[in-house]
Amino acid sequence: MRFDTGCACCRDDFYDYEEWIMQRVTVVDHPLAQHKLTLMRDKNRSTREFRQLLNEVGMLLCYELTRDLKLEAVEVETPLQKTLAPALSGKKLVFAPILRAGTGFLDGMLQLAPAARVAHIGLYRNPETLEAVEYYFKAPADVADRLVVLMDPMLATGNSAIAAVKLLKDKGARDIRFACLLAAPEGIEKLRCAHPDVEIWTVAIDSHLNDHGYIVPGLGDAGDRMYGTK
Ligand code: URA
Image (cartoon, rainbow, N blue to C red; front, side):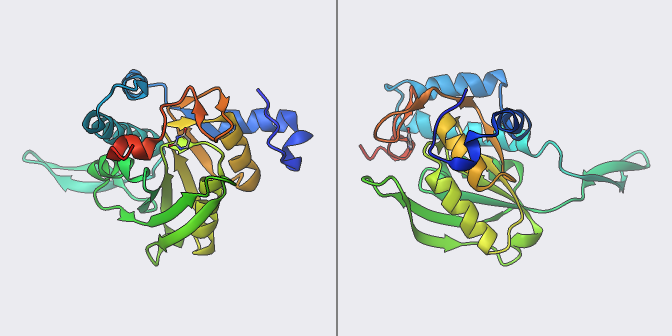
């Protein structure tokens, strides 16, 4: 599938693009993640249920995108004997939710990786231009040495994700993964053009964006649905 995002670098390298998608986008097709997303799409889902489901999907995404974390053998003494057993040894984590909807994943991720640090990235969408506007950014000082999991439930235009990756890179981050619930093809392509090093994990890739920058069929405004602000 190709979408003209107006991005010059995507136009002439179709095969590179297809290959990049295969290598750098993971669709989490675990039945539990798929089922939870379907529940969340339902417009009659309550705010409480929506928030709970987002939290649970955060946990599943965290599980999937940390699959390749490095392990080392450490000595441990069980009640029976000493033995060598695997323990995490690689880079430590930073979870970086884009405010406000990204916080919906945070508790679920922290339940699996409670020692992770947290960065907060405040961006809002200018409703006319759909551009991302920064209003807050705070990240751990050692972000350069950590694996950063940037999170936002909706990868729509890609503008917020691109701005957030830039803020993190300006602070020194070099190893960034992006976690979302739903992605639009346009957003994937745009993020890929701006930051080809950033891998994407999503539960589904939907059809397209509408004229207001909403993902179709999507689930509506994730922030409003989590916080009951509509
Ligand atoms: N942000 C949302 O919350 N929903 C969309 O469909 C697009 C962007």
